[in-house]
Image 1 (cartoon, rainbow, N blue to C red):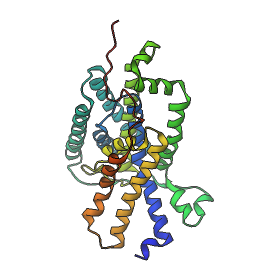
Image 2: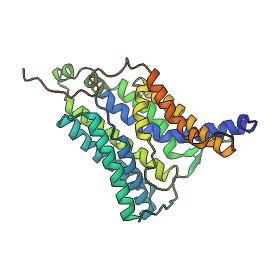
Image 3: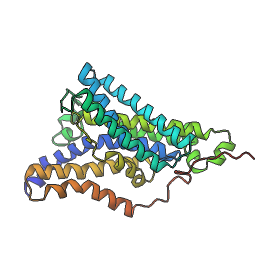
Image 4: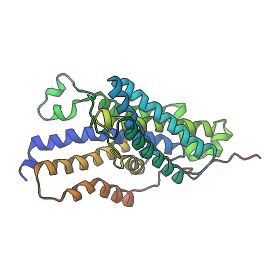
Length: 310
């Protein structure tokens, strides 16, 4: 147990947690936009799987990482449009629609994997770590905080950007008003459907990029069901956050720290069953949802908007 509490081990876990939080942040912030506008998307997991495969396949074929991320974002956008059409235009029950989208995304990514890559697990050269001069040289702290790939830095930068958009812009005011009181927003000339389409598509784009971070910025390979429930945890993170970007950040770090801890426990050979260690992030998800307060939830969350003819 001495190794577990050494400075090198502790900061190693912190550094790993910061990197592992990356897909949680992308997917969680995307889901935050969805839910703030009154929609929630349980299809995030399926979008992530499609983003992961498409990004990997493009990079495997072209060796162009930027193109891989772009394709993942476009795939996420298209799947976001599908979810918007079903939940906003056709006003279908969002939970069932989202689960259907997840099944579609997981199944299609598996089919493409077996068809285009013969089900062979391959690897690519993903994004390389970028050391920030001076800061990265600080003992322990520098390596943990300032030696990551560009997709990690962008993920954390999206937190203040999301806060500015939601709370400092006219667009953010429209998004929040549509989530809280769509009837009032419509009366003031705000197109409820357009705002919800926009937010669900933003969520789709970020979920697609979240998937890409698995296959070309973290693990650097593709395998079936590699997101392992991250999309569902991202949905839970929004509840945990109280529908605030900084809350998504704190939740992402908490979940990723638990994940990093269970990985390090296995590496150190500490006598704890691996199955129990792997269950820790999901146990934390359940406990969080039991105790978290939902008083800040958008009033019109998951409620289809029917425009009054009067």
